[in-house]
Image (cartoon, rainbow, N blue to C red):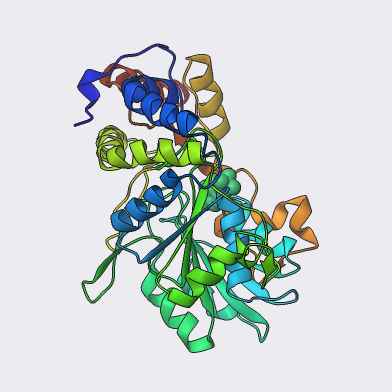
Amino acid sequence: MYSKQMAITFDDSIQMVDLQTQYYRLKEEINAAIQEVLNSHAYINGPQVATFAHHFAEYLNVPHVIPCANGTDAIQIALMALNIQAGDEVIVPAFNYVAAAEAPALLGMTPVLVDVNPNTFNIDPQKIEHAISRRTKAIIAVHLFGQSCEMEPILRIAEKYNLSVIEDNAQSVGAVYTFPSGEAKKTGTIGHVGTTSFFPSKPLACYGDGGALMTSGEELSERIRMIANHGQEVKYHHKYIGCNSRLDTLQAAILNVKLKYISDFTKIRIKVAKQYNEEFKYLPYIIPPYKSSFSTHVYHQYTIQVKGKKRNELQSYLKQKGIPSMVYYPVPMDRQEAFRMHARKTDNLTVARQLSESVLSLPIHSEMRDEMQDYIIEHVKRFFKITG
Ligand SMILES: *Cc1c(COP(=O)(O)O)cnc(C)c1O
C-alpha cells in the first residue's frame, strides 16, 4: 500500500507535481524493471509492451488497448482509423489543451469549437447540436482535469447524426462515468475510441513520452494497430497510409510498475482535493472545482476559479511565497493564432473566455504532505485577507 505517511522528501520546495519523490519511493521496482529491459535489449516491442497493454485493458475493462508514442499521436491515429477525411469537420471543446484541435487540423480537417460547461469545464452537450453541419464526422470529448464529460447526451447526439465519438482521456485515467441507467464505465472506454497520454505528469505516466488507444471494436482495433505501425498488415506490406508511433519498451516497463499504484495515487489526490475544498468553501472569491453527479473526479488538476479579476494577482502572491500554480489554459482555442484560420466556431464561446481569465490550478500530487498543503491554504487565505 502506497501511503502519504511513508513519504521521503528529497526536495522541500513545493511543486505542481512531485515526480522525484514518487520515483524514490518506487525506485527499487522501477530500476529492476528498467534493468530487465536493458538485459534483454528488446528496446522496441519488447514483451513489456504487450504485458502493459494487457494489464491496462484489464484495469479499464476494455477489450483492446493499443499503445503508441504519445497522446497527440493517439488522437491522430483515432481520426485516421475512423476513416475521417480531409475537409470533414470534428467537434472539439474550445477550452482545452491544443491536441484535440491540432490533430484534426493537421489531417486537413476542420476543428469546430464548442463552448464548455462553466462548472465542469468540459464540452457542453447542449451546444453540440448547433455546431453540426453536413460535413461533421466526429466529436472529441475531452475529459478535462480528472472528470468525465457528460457522455450520455453526447452519445445520443452522435448516434442521431451518425458521428464517431473519440474520448481524450489523457487527464482522467481512472475516472468513472455513470449513465442515467446506472451503468458505470471508466472514461476512455465509452465512445468508439479512447485515447490517452503517459506524459510524466499525467495520472498514469511514464518517464518520457507515451500514449495509447482503447476500443471495444475488434476490426477498429486492427486498423488502429496497423495505422500506428506504418499501415502494415504484414511487415513491408502496407494496407493503409499510417505513421510510426510506438511505446518504447522502457516506458512500458515503467508503466507496468506505475499501473499497480494508480488507485493509491488517485486516493491521495482525492484526499488532498477534499482538504482544499473544505478550507476554501467559505472564501467568497474562490469557486472550488465542481464535482458532477455523473462522474468520479480523479483530480489530475485542482483548478479553482478566482473571482473579481484577482487571478493573476493571487498567482504572483503565491509565487512570492514559493508556491507554484498554473493557468490551464490561458488562451481559448479560437484566440490561438494558429487556429484563427483553421477552426470554425459556432458562437462567441464566452464560457471558454471567462475560464481562461479566471482559472488557477494549485499543486496536487501523490506526494503532498500535510504541512505543505497547510502552507498553501494559509497563503491563499492570507492573500484574500490582505486584498479584501
Ligand atoms: C497531455 C494531453 C494530450 C497530449 O498528450 P502528449 O502525450 O503530450 O502528446 C492530449 N490531450 C490532453 C487533454 C492532454 O492533457
